Image (cartoon, rainbow, N blue to C red; front, side):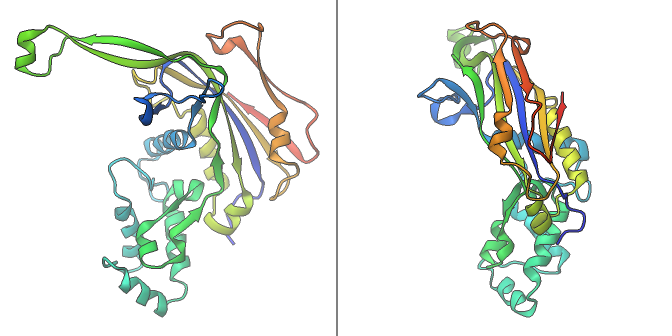
Length: 300
């Protein structure tokens, strides 16, 4: 049992938009914006959004003790795993035999490593992780299921990605410079789209596994609201979180099914049949008659 873990279940809905950018390119389709081929609705993966949240936490906390990021750019996972082994005075060989022997000597080794990883890495406490070094050593803490989970984001209306031709005057080689003054390229954009993403926070998993705390939760809301603010680029265009709707349950296991709460959140165009080009073209509302034991907070 984790003493500081949250005690209430949460469900939440995120609305974010993109203007003249590519919110999440598909590498299997030439980096074209992800799209549902049957309906034409745009998609953004949960992995993409988790990356933004991790990046924000890393920027704000700057690897402070207890707030490190496990899954980060340019850092092998084994390097982060080694911090736990160093803390416990262990060293893993290629086959993990010495870890197996250490586990025989200390039956609580799994839990000790798990506790260290959860207490030191924010994204493990939040999203969970698969820690390959420990799996090789036959340790059961190798896979941690996190209390916070996100679904795919989906646009409120079908999108029509545009392929824009661009030119540059910076020629790559001397040989090319003798033959031409510019080079051609292409980029994909979505002129405008509003996306909706649904998420879940399990107090039960937080208590039993990772110790995800109230302080962690407040940082999560802050990271979601600001996840695009330090991630601007020419490729992604103008992206912003427009609304975060949080449902808080009075109990650990919840007072109502998630889908009923999500069904209480409505987003529709102000003018039916129009083509949205701004977040103000939508009206987002939450039904007031919520199930007993559930409260709603709207953040912007």
